[in-house]
Image (spheres, rainbow, N blue to C red):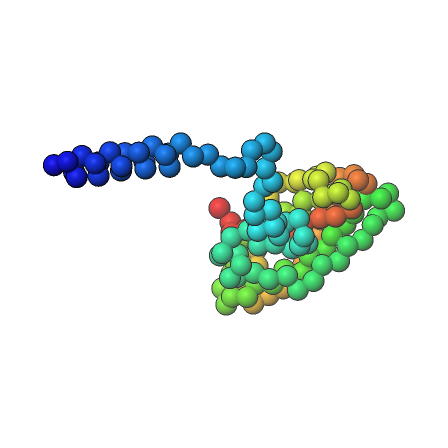
Length: 139
């Protein structure tokens, strides 16, 4: 009986000791996994879900600065499947630092079987220096 009480007491002390320990790190901490999900910051064409990733690809992007300073982007989007697809597409225009200057609404975009279709986007102002064309399954 005495060993049982001693064992219980030691167990309780061990739990109390480990429960009260704190991390040695204090103050401001750096964020973790900052480069894990940053494709939209690095890539000019991204697929937003597994369905789009399986069915759609980009054959090419052409960017042109118009005479008034606005950015025009032409994307060649390819249907990789032998069926007609409806996806949604958007081009988010960004300034030189990567902050969004123009985020138009998602547009429905239809791709016939195994076809490559062109989609054109024009920024609303001359602040756009970068962009990301985004494609997702239609909702």
